[in-house]
Amino acid sequence: MSIALLNHTKTATVHFSTQISSISQKDSKKFVLSTSNYQLPTEYDRVIIATPLEYSNIKIPSPKPPKLDGKYHRTVATVVAGHLKDKYHVLGDILTSDTGTFFTCLSRVFPTGLFVAEKFPVYKIFSPDRLKESQLDELFKKVEFLHVDDWLAYPDYPGDVDKKIPPFKLGDAGIYYVNGVEWTASAIEMSLVGAKNVALMVAKDLGMPCVPPKPKKSLEDREEL
Image 1 (cartoon, one colour):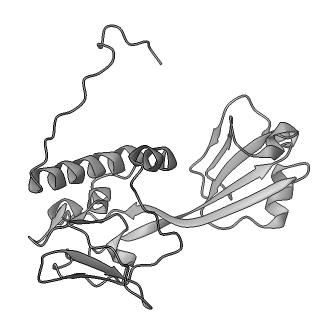
Image 2 (cartoon, one colour):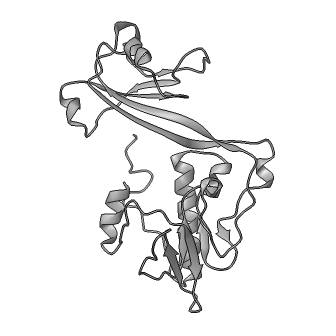
Image 3 (cartoon, rainbow, N blue to C red):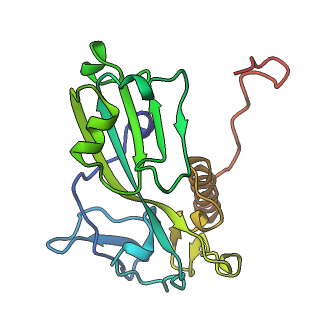
């Protein structure tokens, strides 16, 4: 989705493997971004931060929102190509909250762009810790392909979080923050809500029209999913 959106803009410049360490504002009110080693050549009218500030050391001219007491929940996503053992071979997904089980979710991934999927089924496993080789052997007859993403997926919510939701706009300098919405609820849909809110704010502040596109089909004409 992200690649398709970037291709659609045709003017976007993507800097891969570039960790921003500071955002500064010039006398012209334009923003410049810097890494620990150099300053990016482009100047920007507005800056949107789309990474949790709780785990970021980015220096910004606007005040950062107050740090919340909660932490982010660790999720390990393991993608495996191979045949499941018979005891785990079921028609649907396996979801569990049993703390005695080493995984929380086991589901088939289809379709997928992995070439190995032409020969073997591909599964996604969520777990609180990295899976050991013995645990993979418990699930699969043989592991043909393995990929692991170990990440902080979403916040563990403190009880008083509703009193401290970070704002979408950080001060009046022109810096916006998408990830604050995660502290209300965490899902890709919430991230889209936060992104849309920020996009509308930026457009309004820059004096750009904010006219939503007309749907191609009416609600009555849309097919059920």
